[in-house]
Structure formats: C-alpha cells, structure tokens
Length: 150
Image 1 (cartoon, one colour):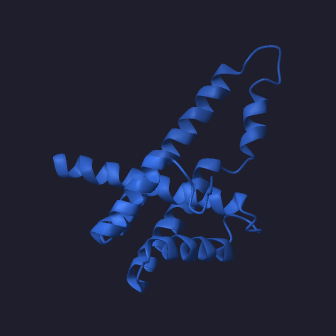
Image 2 (tube, one colour; image 1 turned 90 degrees about the horizontal axis):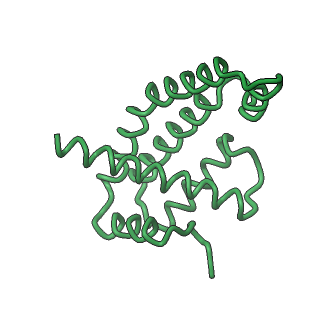
C-alpha cells in the first residue's frame, strides 16, 4: 500500500510539473494552441533541456504530456466550461441540479483518466536519474515555472 501511495504522489507531482511547464510556455510567448502537437513538442524539448533528458526519457515525457492533454480535454467536456458555469446562474435561482450534474461529470472524467495520467507520470519520474529527480523536487519547492526569472 505504501508503494502505491508513493506512486500516486509522484504521479501527481509529475503532473504538476508538466502543467506548470505548459503554463510557463504559454506565458513566455510560445504561440499556438496548448493542445497542438507543435506546442507539446516544444514543451517536451524545453522541459527536456532543463532536465537534460535522454531520448527515452523525452519519449516518456511526451507520453505524459499526451495523457495530460487527453485528461484536460475530458475534463473540459463538449461545451465551453465558462458557458456551462455561467448557465448555472442564468435563471432567477442557481441551477443546483445542473451544478451537481456538472460536478458529477467532471469527477467521473477525472476518475476515468487519472490512472493513466498517474501511470505515465510515475513512468516518467521513476525513470529519471537521481539528479534529475532532485531538479523536479527543487522546481516544485520553489513553486516557479521553468525559465522564470526574478
């Protein structure tokens, strides 16, 4: 059980690493859709260079990025999230049944995709060298994005 919890935590931290990197890349002027293959390739290259990844590690990072993107799209759903949220407030009263349905849908999507994301994050992190793992820990400790200065 302890090993399972460790893998879960490492997976979540790995996911946080990638999500932070995606945000950093988006804010640093990397134009294009975050879901595009070009964007993910640039993100993998950027993180790969920061961690000094070899080809196999970059491939594992790319798999993780793909899994995170799929999870992001599943959580987003078929409608624009802001529109769905605004729709809850469209009437004279808050649409409580709609809010419950929205939460249930997002929870189901999260539960359905999380095992794959966790497995990909664990596969990526567990295959890093100790000094690379430390860079990831340092990154999380600082709470800064890759390439953020100041």
